[in-house]
Length: 173
Ligand code: AMP
Image (cartoon, rainbow, N blue to C red; front, side, top):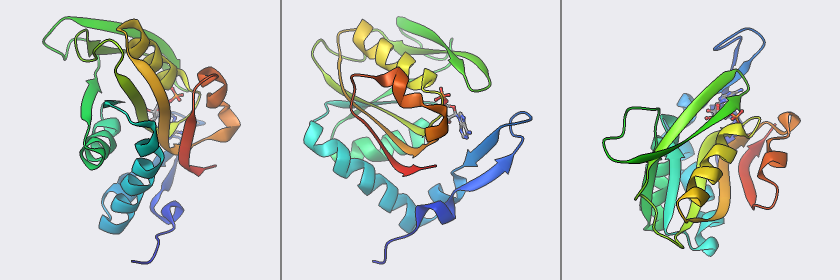
């Protein structure tokens, strides 16, 4: 199979969801069988040697990539959700976004003490979301063994918030 240039499947949408933001729209990539498989396989190749027990991703695009990645790796998936969506006892973290603030929750029993966890998202922007996920994992006893992204917006220096952790992105801008 010929490699797909993933950047051809990532669309820039100007001023979404608010003025001044160049939104990286990954729907064309997800909708293309070869590009989606290549992205998941690329993420899996980086994750595999880190031997994760679970992948943690947030709604909504984190579920799409995270579910496929966990299946490929043969590990579990833990969803991080907006407040009030999860039915069991939760822990939560609030964080700053490139555009606003947000809160994420996970089930308090979703990760066992000592579980090896990789946090995932479609886009690493300022790193606030990823850092919140790292904090959630660590607050319930998990060990973060990596943070993986499809796209990294390097000019926002999100990696700085993840200092001390292994970080990888398939495509950097
Ligand atoms: P951040 O916390 O700033 O790293 O933002 C990461 C989260 O916000 C991810 O879940 C992204 O989906 C979303 N996001 C932030 N900025 C962008 C952008 N320019 N394009 C697409 N998604 C973005």
